Image 1 (cartoon, rainbow, N blue to C red):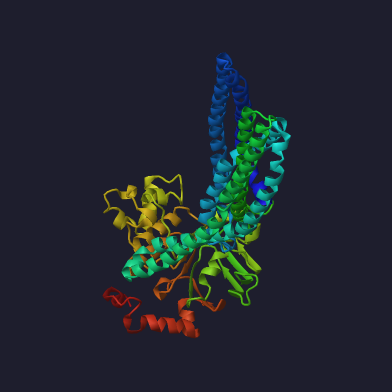
Image 2: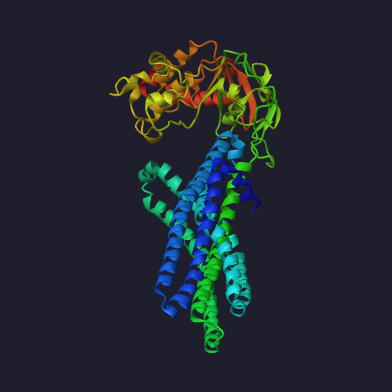
Length: 587
């Protein structure tokens, strides 16, 4: 319940709509409750005595009450919808804003599919709970209290039936809630698993088709889909038991009242109109109790969703800017001072161990190493995507933990190993690097990244639509566009994380030549091809998270066995990497 209370603070400006809706609902219920009293008078006086003017008078009063009830009900629906959907939008925005603040270590705590579910399905559950539950939550207690009071006022003896029926209904509701409460959490996790399979299948649809694994993916989807179906069926199988149970108790009460009321009418102690009016209150009281039970069911499900949403909002952001943070990065020098790092504090081994390095501002540095040697981990510590577990990482001679995060990351550009382009045009993607860049600046960056070669052949040029995730361009073209985008930031430090792997060697050579004309920029090149780093100022060899050797190409070729092994495997026989004729000539 505390999670739901915390989320209610996001009502913000919609709190007024909820209060107005509650007031309108009380008025609607009050008008409705007057109708049975007017009906009793109409029957006992008007119909019994044949007084037509009295019947018309009471009929008009009933019509006015019904009309006012309808008007207030419609107005309530308007304000309730505004409050519930506005509340959902506020929570969704808060969640998205919180996720944007997350460090990579925070994101490791949640699966992407689970975050999607928490921002969509879980919020929909809360919206439905407010929109569908607010009415019975207010109307139910009001009708229950007023209905019981008026019932005792009309006939205390018959009203004693409530004293027996209410505890029975309360026990039934308690048993149902105790059963279905934990099942709602399981249900939402089943939705997470379904979303995970859908996301993975659609993202990798090309690989699925290439390997003809469509049937396998269908079977995997069918499994999680059936799991969600079975979980939903079991959960709601118990949840809907309240309806037949309540109807059984309600009609049992009606039978007892009809039997007692009929005896009292025959004995002259009760009039027919009073019994008719009393039965109206019986139905209203029982319906109000059914409403309250539905509210509890909605509330039980919303509590599970509220807890999942609160986990996202209350996740402590592990990386943040310090007070009085440094906002200017003086240069692109980088220092690792006895740095060790592990992704999980409970991990037995470090991903990086005792790394000590110095990279001077403006240098071009290559990083080589086998798969799993922590090359990417090393460079992720520079813009403080992760914090070092021990030791110090410095940029511009200042500990990265003393910088304003925005200022530090703005001074570092990373071209990721996995190229990421967004839906939209080439121009819109490039402007991520510099929002104020004009066409001349954009084309200059594209020429440096050798992206102009294919952009000039495209009919739309910079305004060519890339499609979702850049599906309209090849892997090498994606890489070159990402390099151009990074260059537009004009950063102090430029990091290539194996980001020319899909580019041919000749094009890669032209990119290296263009980057050599940026002496103010420190460049770190993580690569698998030795030709990508052969001309750098220094080469760092990583092995199992440790610095194995540092030196120039000539120095390492003479002194380091790992580097010589890499060189021989790629260069022997004139074959650099892919074995093309151009590469043989270059070798």
